[in-house]
Length: 477
Ligand code: UD1
Ligand code: MG
Image (cartoon, rainbow, N blue to C red; front, side, top):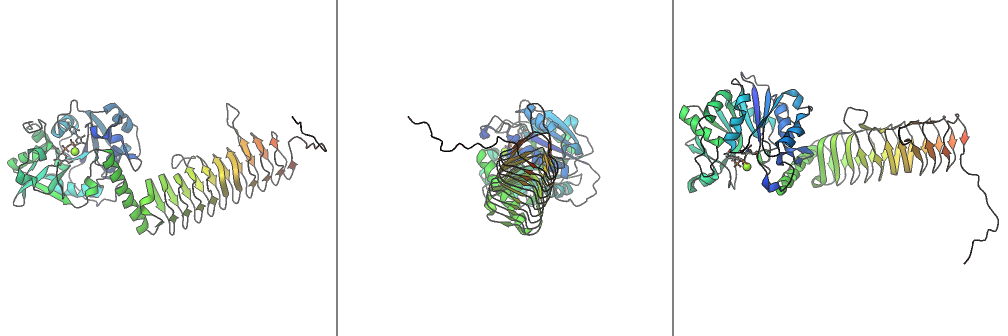
């Protein structure tokens, strides 16, 4: 999301319009284009989150193709959409970008600055938009532009001297105009009142028979309203998505940018090209991350944490000095809820461990290979090193939980809790049928199936007594 914005006092409020009615034919997908994911977030959600960072007063989303799906995906109040009024306006049929904006006119107030964005240009930064808004200043038409070595397909910024005269679409441009490298990014900031007046004057007399939003530049020039081009150098911010190839390219470019930021903070990445952060990764000093790791949602890594190769980690807080060995899957639920995952300082997890929602591991806990932990609390120094399941369990300090043991937490209808008090030793291959409490310091013999609580300090063995028949002859054919 957005960086901190310089606090510019403008008379006018900012109202964002996001165009998202286009079909996205080249995605060759049933999913509307703007709902495809970049870094784990829908393209359109990136843009909406940026609008939130801009402290927009209202956000209007123009939908058309897949309108129901797009509206449903954004209608539920989320962190960012709760911050402003959100309107959906349908554009059917889609007769061009100017026509798209015309649909928004009834919901736009006259006193605002309208910032026009595209739902398929996900990485526009809030501070760039703030500069564009400042360039508009409530009185001018401000266009976001960039120089492209290959401007094919884009609208060209036509100037007379320094003065912007028009945007000419590629298909309408002369040879001389096509040589212009400065293009219109599709993003502008314009006073609402002027925009409304200009939109009313659009026609579709051009090579594509569309109502071009870009024609308002000519009207501004005719009306003596200054047109300013705010040119940036960062192509990623204005990169649009039209195809799976472009989506993948932008994903890699975005991931590399995040990787570089992490390394600049001191994080050691074995290979910045093999890291995926789909959310927010916050790292303390001296964190190292091996290849092919995926971080989702909100993940915090404490000082000196080491993440092995091929780990997938979602919504977790991992404290200082913990080591996550290769191939571990940490799958926390929503941040800030009981389902988020905590891994204590100095804990050792994996390889091949699975931490599911609500796993809360204290300091120095060891979770080894093929161990699954769900909705369970393990206190300091507890260990489950091999092939085990802990579900809905409360595990005390220094407990040793043997290989192959499980908590049978589900009776087919309800989940029940297992309490294993401090210093208990559970042997291998035990079944603890919940609800159940194993008293502090107790020992449970390997292969036991416990159905009743045990007293502190007791040895509990619950299995068939061993029978050995001497000189047993096996049947023979
Ligand atoms: C537009 C600009 C062009 C600019 C380019 C930057 C116009 C006429 N041209 O061209 O100057 O260089 O963007 O990428 O504006 N959309 C609707 N309804 C419509 C048509 C489009 O909502 O009827 C939406 C699309 O979904 C998309 C955005 O508007 O999000 C831009 O549309 P697109 O067709 O990509 O415009 P371009 O022709 O590329
Ligand atoms: Mg386009």
